[in-house]
Image (cartoon, rainbow, N blue to C red; front, side):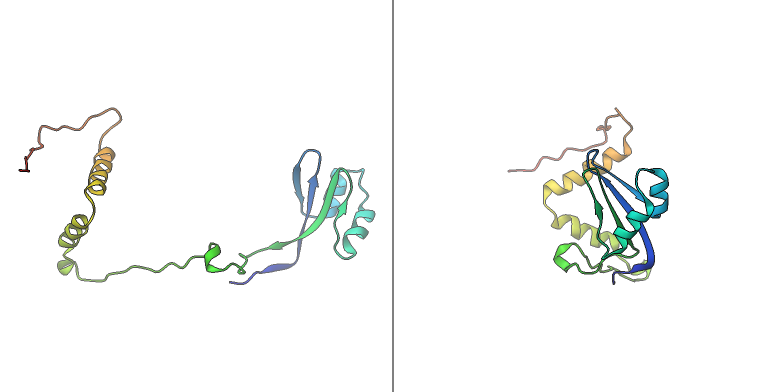
Length: 143
């Protein structure tokens, strides 16, 4: 990915210092029409020279280019990620998912298995409803 700046597409960013607010205008003319105390010619001359922002005690006015695509200068440790698809293509008759699922859950600790069962049961119950435990057989294991 590369940083793409739309050529010629700019906005006017207004930062009001005392209110700590920001406004965005599509062009300088709209800003000057909204706030007549700011002269269009003065601001335009100021902003076009070396692209330096106009600033006083009340406001900071600057032109900014519109960035249309994500910036690519991030290193992998700074938040970019690689997504590796996990795909297993097998015929349905040969999938043997029951055995794979059983192997997976037997490899998990007891706490995680109990947590998963509790989560699945809670999804099936309505609010305030309790689980019917009459069908559960308790088996004692010898210690």
